[in-house]
Length: 246
Image (tube, rainbow, N blue to C red; front, top):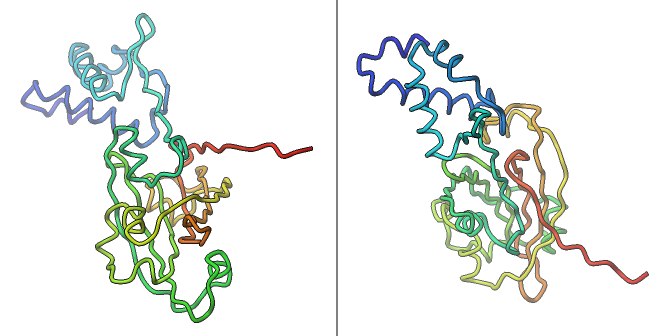
């Protein structure tokens, strides 16, 4: 790689090599569990010594990006999927904390619906006289976009709140007004479209999980209706199924 030869400070060459390998992993050039090219091949490509390659690999091992298998070479570490429902009904922030990861939220929009959707009104058991808000957010895990939420709520649960308030846990905001009890979810597989490709930084046509959920209060009143798009490469869902009487 030319950029390596141009480096004057050789002590930083291995960092540049590590950054390039990491970029390839993030962009899917090297995929989960794939064996990397040999040290010889990498040193030839990057036009540097094998010692520099070893230091770059060691740096990526410390970052839990690469794993070295004795006598077999270096491999891209298998990415751990986030299992929704593993610890019951949790918000994104709570789930991230349970996995020891950092979460962030990008609020895309928060606005009152001008035209009421019949399906949303039915799911939330509301009438035409009720006011409904739409909240759209991108949820981020360790600086990587993971899911896009389109959430619909009655005005009584968001009264007095502004767009900036939704950078935090939505469940925490709601539970200051009402106790959350349970949620019904429907999951289906779809393909990434251009909108989700841009928001989630994944290629168009990749698999995506579309999740429709209704979250209820302790008295079985619907609180929110959520249409969320989850990256299929990073998410799996856990459900408990109860067998009925035959």
